[in-house]
Length: 194
Ligand code: IMP
Image 1 (spheres, protein in one colour):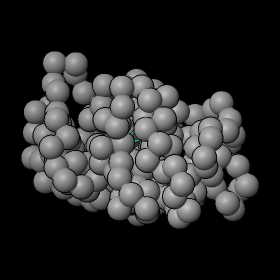
Image 2 (cartoon, helix red, strand yellow):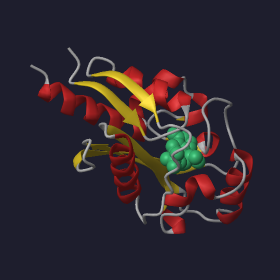
Image 3 (tube, protein in one colour):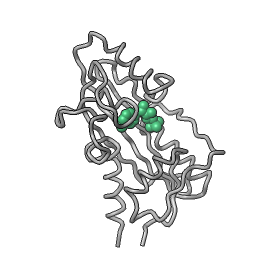
């Protein structure tokens, strides 16, 4: 028996809905995307703020449980940029990577981390739980690999000696920021299971 018969994922991205449904399968009967008529602007100043804002708004609009995530890349030498602006750092993945590499030209400290915050909101909009995953790595000076999306080709994971773009989806999922945040959400539902 699922813990929640139905929940909304505050996203219009079907790929993301499938990924989340895969992780939360036994506990959430049906995970549905946010209707295309509802647009929620990410106006908060933190990953946590944006995840909670999206989950709360989606829950109240739909009168259902709602899940939302916010994620991005924080580069140490750039004081945490692009951070919550990761998706808006350029018009395409290629332009975002190009801009980041330009800003990192000649910079020796290449440390960076991907961060993902997930929020679960009750139908009245109150937050039931938030989880956070982080994956540390380094920014390469040129892209490597053809898998994944976003900044994956320039994100080097020293413990794996590969970029995110050189890993299979399964390998990335096991160590990624999003995988860790989803794992914590699984543990939350697991603890509620009879
Ligand atoms: P969000 O959909 O608002 O959470 O935007 C996250 C943005 O951060 C994406 O558009 C990517 O640019 C970047 N990002 C987040 N997670 C990843 C990842 O796993 N790999 C590469 N880029 C990511």
